[in-house]
Image (cartoon, rainbow, N blue to C red; front, side):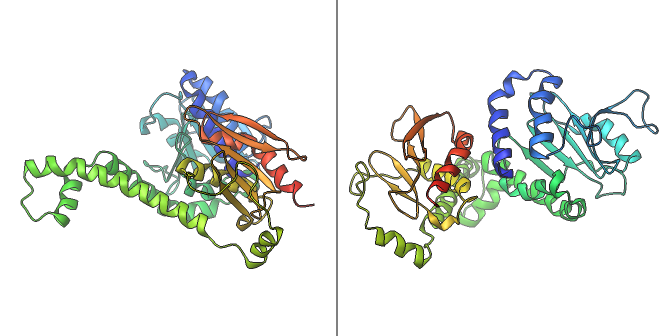
Length: 361
């Protein structure tokens, strides 16, 4: 499984089971240990790699422990402190991390409730943990732009120097993004006044504030939707290499039953989103330009080389209440899988890749 898929799978699990984890121990077992094992790639049963209930010999309160220490070459590299999954994370929860950070060789500290992971280092003063995280990973809403930096902390690609060098940029970039997210959701008066001043010539009175506040909120939401649609459109309109286009044309395939391309066919954003997920999975086997799609009245087909004889998957999203992913075996027999969310497509990644490989022989 690819790194992004591992994160996506744990994210899906966290979203489904978060409300069931009412204690700190439940959060550790359900989310934190799988995060250490499957995402970061460390052996949670090998004390040379992961030490639970870690205690330092000096400089801390007697009997105080940190939940996990990630080891590398017998040195502490990362410290992890856990709280219960339904509890908000506050810097006050990190008292043990602050003390242990100063008396170990650790340069990375992680405060987590199993769903949100706050990453700290010592940008402000050497050997003193910063008061604000440089990176925040939320499994409830994963920011994929953070995955390359997270990957640098995995066992197979551990690159502490690179993470530290990028930490300051990540810290302020993440803070600005969080501010923007807050303003887009609930714009404050200063934000509304600033934007209104660019389009409104009158005095910014209480009446103007009440008029422009919902307009700014609506415009922000529409702007985000427009940007998402533009990115999807660009991705779908990317031209295929001429050789591959010629191959598809030479096949002279007529659309199969249910694949007629005519009026009455409406491609939805959900279908395009599902296509992007399947494409991301299939790209581990072939170049992304070879993954194409054809919409129809019956289903949304995802094909290799735009060839009906090389189906990768089908999205049955036309029904209002239920959505299905169709996967294919080596004999091109389709099996439909009920989807509770778009993330569940990742659960069928092996079948999608196998379908691609079956067309490569």
